[in-house]
Length: 640
Image 1 (cartoon, rainbow, N blue to C red):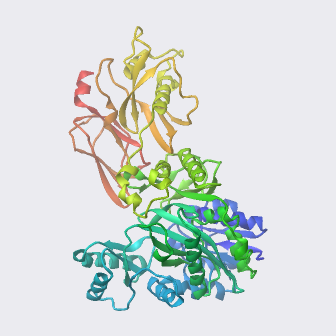
Image 2 (cartoon, rainbow, N blue to C red):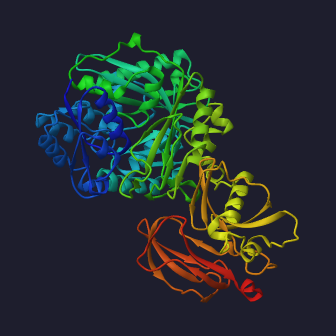
Image 3 (cartoon, rainbow, N blue to C red):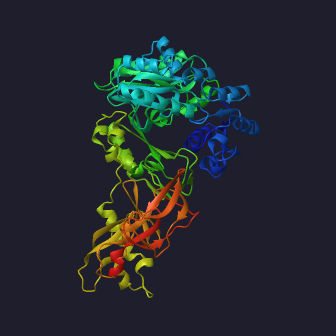
């Protein structure tokens, strides 16, 4: 067994590798960019080496720096994790040439599977079924269009060097082909430096099935059964499970045998995944499942395979890299129960899945699940890397139990001020079609408007918010601890002789809301909450709701000012402020300009009124959801 290991990665996969290495008594070395100087993987490793500026292209993607760090620390081996340099054959060769053990497949195997067209040609030669299509060298638009017509629409144009969902275009009709081809080639050139494409038949009821394979240096190759990764958004996996629902033993034997055959065809060593596309229009059938591509590395979703087989795949990687034989023979591997994984991202589904960056002031993850993460409460989500916060993994005796446990876990995620997709994941897991195991890769896209609609707070949360608004000391306490009746009148329309059941005016995520509230009832004892001045963040169903008292000047004033709250749609920098407090503004008038995600966003007045509150200044950094200004309606100001 190797004695020391440098991990050429970051985040949750680095922490995952460190955990197994520690179990095996292997010393670990972390590398980190400027942005990751205080990251969890750095804190957990036995030693850590800085490798450069925050952008990955200047640090984690610079192979020379990684190898230099290994030599500096005396690391015997380098584990690339996934992403970054994990499927870079030249880097793998450079590691080997430097006399360092490469924890991964042979460089020639990476090259053989790196280009989709060459990989498919090799699979055809090996007798592995592939999707009908065109893999030729003639890349003229005329030839490609002719081949698409021969395959039959709809077709999929794919960059041969693509990955991660980039360089792919679905084309439904011949008239759309030329524009889609140019768009695909532009993206491929930008992302991969290679404009070559292939044409595939587009499967109308596709499911994404993949098989975990493992090889050693002694000629042994086994599979560890299949995973279903059909629930995707823009070709990025969202929820994965093992085994695949609806997979009978005959089909399983056929697809797993094809995966082993594919791995042997490239003399594969280490962990890899053979990805298949299945036409599920008539259920899963062996004659309707085709090879797509091979990922020559460990996959993000490997924990579900670990859970159903009871194996530690990172340990397998380290043992194989040390020259040992595979820990298990094929006949010693079996499926036990059901496992599911959900990817928790720092993003807001309700705003088009915009990434959400910043400090994790509150991060509570369900301890009843297996949690794979690279951050803790108090850490920061950086804009430089993938916005994954954690993977939530569950294992149960049946699919229904695993599904229920994961849905419950996602609903109990508490995170703020960074937004997450936890409520979106919980909503997906409760979908009747998914619960029945009947979804395709297009399910999320087909139902995006409904699935990503912003969640609404429930009655219990609104009652708790009302409690906080009324009884929070900063809001209602008088000089001697007595109620401030002027404030209560603004919040409740309060009168001493009024009935106890009143309507409380609140702002929930900047929207005006009235809550029927019983003054003698306290409902805020159980909900988890974060208090900041008059603002309270409450958690429900995996979502965070920012609530605050909605102050109305004068006891009889109708309506509320909360619908004039101007919120930051995402983290960013204020580059211009065009008003001052007290200014009269008209509907649509620009108030300020926010720069975020390399774009400028103008925030405007929602109606005619007065700038009653201004919390922004040019040059200031703001977090998502921050109240930057508040506009009071002109008629409200007059009535006051």
